[in-house]
Length: 474
Image (cartoon, rainbow, N blue to C red; front, side, top):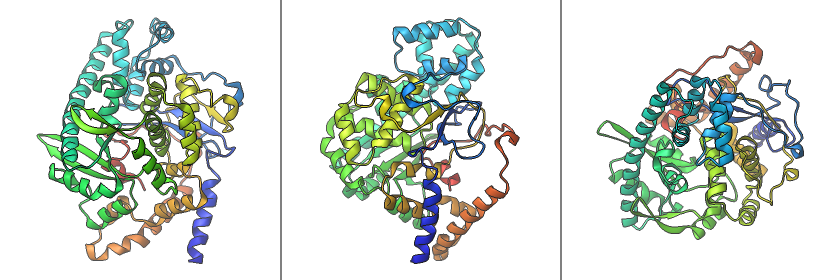
């Protein structure tokens, strides 16, 4: 036991030394140069002290100075178009950019990579496609219509699932996806959705699993050993159904912040404020405005603030349906989410111009951030440790690290397939595999300036919470 604590303590000391909540520098970049709609690269926050990740030519600004962030014209155009409804001032800035030569392939790469191309198309349509070549207009329209059809199918399937769960008297909250698109933007087609997320009470989790299976969904993990681990330690449980050539993924949630000592109390507070509603004609529950903001902030932080789409959701929510910021602040402090809220707000403010609530002024932000424009580097963010940023207490962080280091993951099964009778060997295999992986990473490390700018393959996927992620994430 002493040896285990020593190992965890050493790992925690190393990781906490790179915490974004201290005085460390943080780099924010928007990933680009991705050639496929299916490839999701990241708007990401990376640690400035990690060798090779920081452009030291850019001076670090003081937070209270609130300096402007400079981007290339294409970057600024993408950030402007990736919004719900443009204000008159934003329309003027957009028309000004469209009146100049635009590198449209770059704009499309970023819009596809960040899942904001439906909003880009909608806003260009509102502006009459001024300055947009016909080929670009045609491509965006094709992608928009394809997403619209996909979301229509997801909306119908979500309604069927909610009706079935309601008939079994299982309270259910639809999260993100097509429900958020309809409630926040007024049109399910304006947001890219890849799956259906459902939140149920922990006490009804097993009942909900059986109901989803009755709908024809199969567990993503066919191995009983990993199914049990996922239910015990995972943040959600995944299903998939292939029907008429269409694959639909469902994720069942019952936790808010995995490994957090506050999670049980936070979930109880969330359900206490949830209100009955209708979702595409089916009975459901919805989050209170305060918990909707907090959940979206938690989700963005849990994935290292990857994806401009998630930040745009938070930006639009703050404008169209602002929560009671005093209550948001109280809940964030009560459940250990204050720094998550602060960093989420400042990120939205600096990139999208989100107005900071009166309770959150620039002087209250002590995290030192530095910003760089769109980057062509293909280094993926370290998603394995991103969840640590949601945890405040040292013991919670140690529990999370123990889960990362010692609890087998699907990547271990992909590394070597063991018969069911030897499944327990995945525990030592997990630790040995990670040790070898990181030793090799250190030995093969090259400075940033010596790396080639290699793009991900066109068929690569980066959808948070999908089977493809689980196969590759350690």
